[in-house]
Image: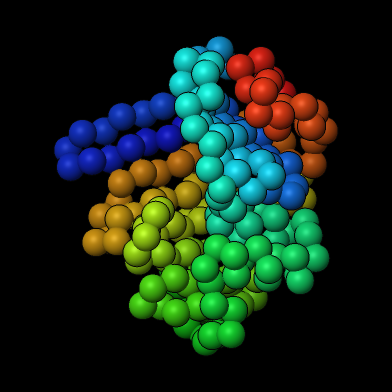
Amino acid sequence: MIKTLIALSIVATDVWLEAYKSTGNLILKFNNWNSGNGYLFTNDSLYTYQDGTLQSTKYRIHDLVVLGLDINNIPPETTAKRAEKCGYNLNIIAEDQCMGRDAWVVGDTSSTCFWVDKKTLLFLKMRRKSGENSREVEFAKYEKINGYPVATVIKFYSNQGELNMVEKYFDISPGCSIPATIYNPNGFLNAKW
């Protein structure tokens, strides 16, 4: 994945290596396999690494993983419970427009909500107006890869609507075999896939 950070007039581009496995497992290695820097989301926790050393661990269900990835691989009841734990009110649903598409918006649009395409039921966007990880995120472009719909462009906005990061995915292999060992927090430095 190519990640572009945008802050005022400063632009930086990095390559991140990512692997996802349902349910809720996502590993991100920054810059290269051996940098020792990155994140691991597993067992409802976020592990942060720097120079190969675990810097912090905290409880975190990654809502983009739940809504954009897990939703396609787990029972709806499980998705609903996990989305509620992320702060989404699933009792509020309305028709709306999102990114030029007819959509369902779920949750409180003044605080925490998400949109799905009415036709495809693919995740389009989320909004979190306050608290940790407040932002808006759009799955801006989907492509069919090996028969799977995959978000290949993801845009991150501040709550003021300023674009501050774009992720562009390439060399994507959905449905491939990934060793479960890469999601072991003690093996981050040596994890490869």
